Image (tube, rainbow, N blue to C red; front, top):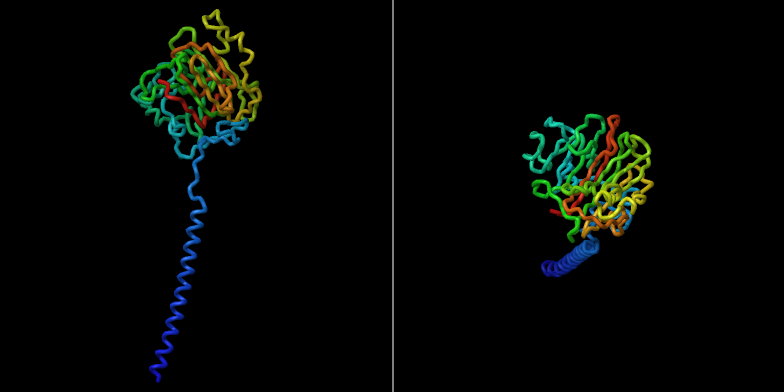
Length: 338
């Protein structure tokens, strides 16, 4: 009897155990499904921002805005300007003379071309006139008497010059052909020297007698040694506003648009500005903040051996000038023009 009674109890226990296990399995399976559903509903990959240079005002990332848009700040952690700006086809002219030839030194991609043999390749170069500051690249250039400069100018510079990507000898591009040549950059003026002005972007022609500095984009402040928070004006100079027919230019640029050379009258030093300059088929366009509509357009551009420049090129320096022109760039990009 005891044996048969025991046999009657065991099936009940087994059935309860099976039922309990089934319930546990259902709970685990339900939790698994919920987990999978949650993972699939919640995005785990964020699409990259197409404007990796900032642009915080909602105008397709190209508008720097009056208050600066992207304030820069490289996240790579590098302290090499070449790397921070992702430069490719440039050399730099510096306001010092380490090779004692009484001219400003130049540093190239190919270090064997450097004026001073101890300088590294431009891909590794940094110094007190060209360095990384808060993730941006700072150009600083003194104006004091005796500061070395180039052989054809009395004004000092810490400035990039567009070069072929392979670092070969200097070259120029033709403004008259149908190839689009583009320079884009984001800049803020940190301070001026006692002259109150310097150019931070240029186009030069280095072969033709008539065309020289096709374009200079400059800061001008009424305050000598202006600093961040002071006011100034951004304006355009160079052959496109100063060239006259009597000098051999195709039109009288001065009478055409000299009075219209100011492109921003209320600039506050320290604010970021976004620029684009394009040249194609003898037409040059300048964009400021709004990258879809040029703020100035100039035609009749017939020079054929041009190059872009960016940095600090002090203007109107005298033997009594003091202080440094300083600008920071968070972006400098140029199309392959050679």
